[in-house]
Amino acid sequence: MPLAMSKEVFITCAVTGSGSTQDRSPHVPRSPKEIADSAIDAAKAGAAIVHCHVRDPETGVPSRKLEYYRELTDRIRDAEVDVVLNLTAGMGGDITFGPTSAPMPVNQEGTDMISAKERVAHVAECLPEICTLDCGTMNFAEADYVMTNTPGMLRAMGGMMTELGVKPEIEAFDTGHLWFAKELVKEGALKDPALVQLCMGVPWGAPDDLNTFMAMVNNVPDHWTFSAFSLGRNQMAYAAAAVLAGGHVRVGLEDNLWLEKGVLATNAQLVERAVGVVEGMGARIMSPTEVRAKLGLTKRAPVS
Image 1: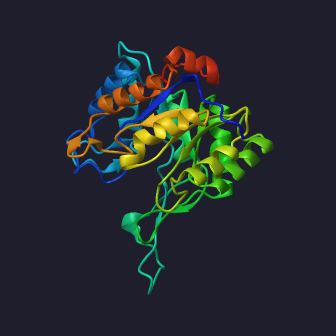
Image 2: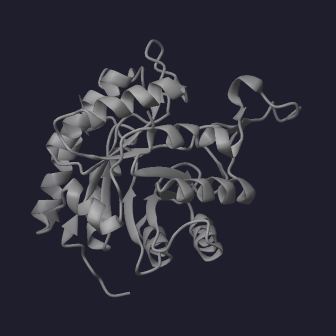
């Protein structure tokens, strides 16, 4: 595959995530207001898209409460800065098994399995331009936790997102996830061309070596749009790698807490650093308006 570097690049900021990072950095936002404020700061720094989860405002524990999503959406939509809103739809597909000596019944405290309609309920109310679709099942770093997204669940959720007029962002953690994403487009659950996020270096999906990364890139159809990221210290290296490979950039506190060794980052600082990487390579940063035109997105108010 010949090198086809991107000359116009959009940056996604993954603002808070659903990992247990809330106690590792004071900059990880918790409440809807804090998440919205951090997203707005990221937009001012150059992010065209903000990808948001919600958390319990007191504990910082990941949540899927509809009222948190609604407050977050209203605050971002009311801001003086324009930005494309991307809400997660990854919650509600979690299974934690019991110990290896007795895996069943499952660990109820770590298990949260709900219907496709429930998993998309906040998307139906908030109507973001984009929402994520984790396109497969995967062992995560925790010993007995499995991110669970069956083909049937993905067909149902993808169809609902498409019917709502919200563009799914396919989260691909391994090559098989891209294989099934192409099947969803073929079947009509997702529209063509699709939008993909290549999630590299997430244990235990695709490792973030460049051979594996290019295998992922080469499995994305040429007319689709992709971004890519890696975790921790490789976040900025992947900003460069994604641009070189013809894609777009994702940074943010969901994936990395550090600006440099010993210095905890804010989302705005990570976006500023990524802007420097992209512009230093001779590419131009795209605006939210340009991203909507490129991806065929419509900015709408939430359901009243």
